[in-house]
Length: 279
Image (cartoon, rainbow, N blue to C red):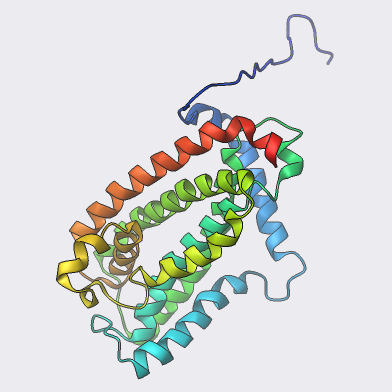
């Protein structure tokens, strides 16, 4: 059926904005189908022509867990809240791996999609947001292995498991907010990409991945709680293994995460109009 004059083509007017601009959530929702396509594209590219496929989502945290179990569990005798150290470490590595991969993927997302940004208009935040899609798939695969480990060690899930999506959302929000700001910085300043791996590596040791919160001296915990990953990882582990929740750490994590994400997304929106000229 041919299009008539009464059925015009949709028209979108793109106007530059000066200063700080809020995130247009309605526009992001309008392009939700494109977000699904970008996520599916990243999943296919990641596992294309691979022998093990999704098993790679488990190998990274599992290999790290085995090394940490040997170094910190057996040799250094690191406390693990009364749990087998391998279970304790793997429960912390799952959210950390999700955050680290999501942050790195978002940070390098713009530079890896220059062919799209320079030719087609769409909300650039979608590219950074799509990097979390593959991470969520890896998270689900790693969680299935974690549940198998709990069965092996005789650790029964508790009602705390219902809170697990809250800490997944908290970790995803931090990866998206901080990664978006780093994506804009990578597009404007090329040397930022060399700093990100170092920051991520140091950040892991500043988070309770290989040690419990009780390992930190009580007088320093207030500063430790300023790291939003402290509440996210500890809460994730507590939800999985039925440990008591550390509410001060969780509350501080949400407060700092909201502030950081707001600042990161605002910075991205401020420089978004110049990205096509620099990439």
